[in-house]
Length: 85
Image 1 (cartoon, rainbow, N blue to C red):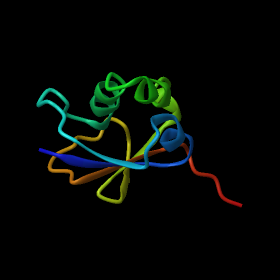
Image 2 (cartoon, helix red, strand yellow):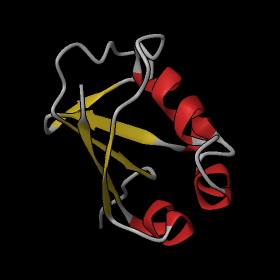
Image 3 (tube, rainbow, N blue to C red):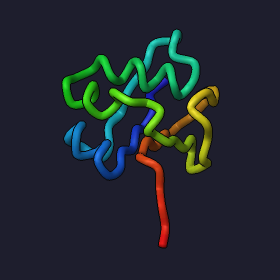
């Protein structure tokens, strides 16, 4: 099932795009699996996802932990931790 990926901040800069459509294999069940799979897609992806612990995610605009199941996700956003002030 194709998923729209959204990337923000330095994740976007390293990958070279803010959005892409991906169709991960069935073995990709949660966000962490997806990040691991994406890291294999290009050198930019590998650089962006080299330290998954520094990433945050949202599935269909809801913040989730990296072990969250993808289910029928249509959109997944990956971004660094957000701080305010």
